[in-house]
Image (cartoon, rainbow, N blue to C red; front, side):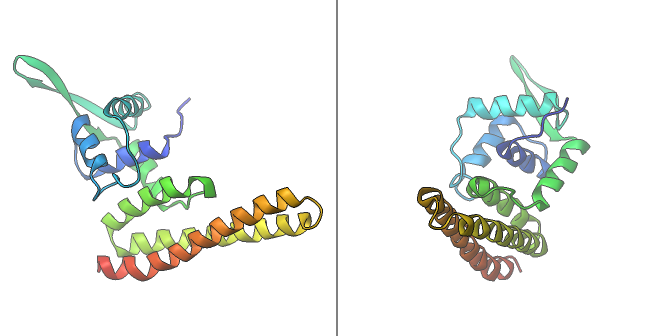
Length: 181
């Protein structure tokens, strides 16, 4: 059974879609503020474990490169299955508000590297999804108003979070496309 990659694993595949790289190079790219360093802080050992998992699941391929007297290094590349999984992940809106910060910011980073159309399409799709979340949350909150105060307050908190995300997505929509053009 092939397990679906985690968000961070998709990001690791995203670096490999550009070109084959060594695990150390991927970790260095991941930690750069210009990349995803403002979103994630991962130990190098965890990155290596995730890359091994992606290799065992068939999403990446490794070729050993000799280094003289030192142990050989793995040069990693994305397989066709890895490319397909990454492409699907990139265009699919984040499914849950709790995952938004980590997952959407990674998607936006890679979509912005593609072109303005990819980034704006991702933003628009996420806006639609967030509005659907709001409709559902408002309906749930309405049913609880005056009956279960604590539960209603929790839903109000979630509504506020989604409204803040939508406001931020509006900012993205007005700034991403012109910045990439």
